[in-house]
Every structure is written in structure tokens, then in C-alpha cells.
Length: 304
Image (tube, rainbow, N blue to C red; front, side, top):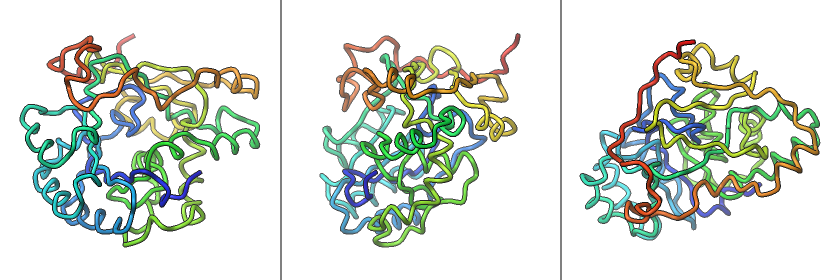
């Protein structure tokens, strides 16, 4: 695993609200009763805490443009960061309305745009490795080499700083103890400072496990999407998860052997969740199968 100071980007996750409902979302959307929204004070504090960080500062959700104070947040980013230092992730919510603001604050090559109207895949994240990999030595090796922590980002949420963006989401979903205190230099801490986070999150996650690819479900535009989940996470979430309560989940209970893991590793590229790079709607146009006007279908309890 990398120290946070070595990462290319650290996310400021201003909300986990989103207009889409992808299968196996990295922010576990579809399971929560209600979203969170960072206060402007929290946003300022998050950016100030990254003083001296040589990588980029990501504006991330959920969908950032669903934050009711997004214009004020962009002003804060503009005031406190250099243009080439900031990066945006968006699923295109009200894209026409916000296109001028995006161009004002971000260079196009530092915008990651995915409206999920094109074929995409998501790695299941709620299959707890402790449930399915019984060989502890193999499990520890998989966790130590997790692609999310190696290739993606640390994060700041309203609950603190996290060594891994998925860990931050899991902490919120599972009502965890929260992250480290957000103060200047928190990201300089060694990984030893995040051991309790690793214990609480990594053993309940499946990001590091080579599992078969699953469609992202076009963000729920074709109907409610299903998440893959292991037994212990099901038990922890069954009383509060909207997806579980409405039946949009499937249980993964297979025990994975070393042979299974080696076999599944061939051709496994979970960070390449689609076949192209997109910074704006025009980059996605030739791959698009659904219209952005196709709205997400609400969850309704499945009938048997």
C-alpha cells in the first residue's frame, strides 16, 4: 500500500447524493436512507488541510453538482487551489446548466465524466474478504496489494480523513468510528496511523478480490440495479439498506481457493471500468447506448 503523500490525488467528498443508482457503486449508493452534504466550513478545512500536498485535490461525490451549495464550493476551490491542482468527477447532473462553471474552474483534461449511458462495469465491493477467502495469508496479500489504494485515492468526508476512498464510504455505510482528524498535514501520516481503518474496512470489502466483472447497470436507467453482497455484510445491513429491503441484492457465498483467485486474476482489470476515457459528453457520444434523458428508475419492493 502507498502512503497518502505518494498519491496523485486526494478527494474531497462533498456529498454522497447522486441522481444515478449504479450496481456495486464505489460509494455504496442505493443503500443509504439519506445523503450527507459537507458544510462550507468543512470544505474549506479539507482544502486547507492539504496545504503542501503535491498531487491534485479532487472534487468528488456522489454527484458534486447535487450539493445545494455547489457554486459556493467552486468559489472556495477557485480561491484556495491552483487551476491545474484541482480535478472533478461528475456523472453529468444538470450538465447544460453547469457547463460554464465547469469550464471556469477546471481544465477539460482534469474532468472525469461518466453519465453511465455507455456500457460499463463495477467491481463488487460488499463481498467481505473474511467471508470468502479462508486462507489468511492469501487474504492479507490481496489486501496489501489492493488496486484501489494503489491506483485511486485517499479521501476526506464529513467524518474525517481516510487512507482509501472506498474505506471512507464503508465507514459511512456501516456507521463506523470515522476517519482521522482533518488538520494540516494529516495526509503526511504513515500507514500505521490508519491501521484501525484498515481493520474496520478491508476485511469487509472485496475490492482486492479478483471477482467476475458485473455491469454497472447503466446507473439504474434501465431499472433498479442489484448489488453483490456476502453473508456478514448482509446481516449488518439488512435492517437499514434500501437495496436489501427492496430485494435488489444477491448473496455471494462461495469460498474462494488459491486456484480460484489465480484463475480469476487472468484478464482482471477492475480499474478499467469502461473501454474509453471521457472528459465531456462528446467523448462518450459514439459509445452511448442510452440517452442522458433516460431517468433512473426508483427502487420498489420486488414481488415473487
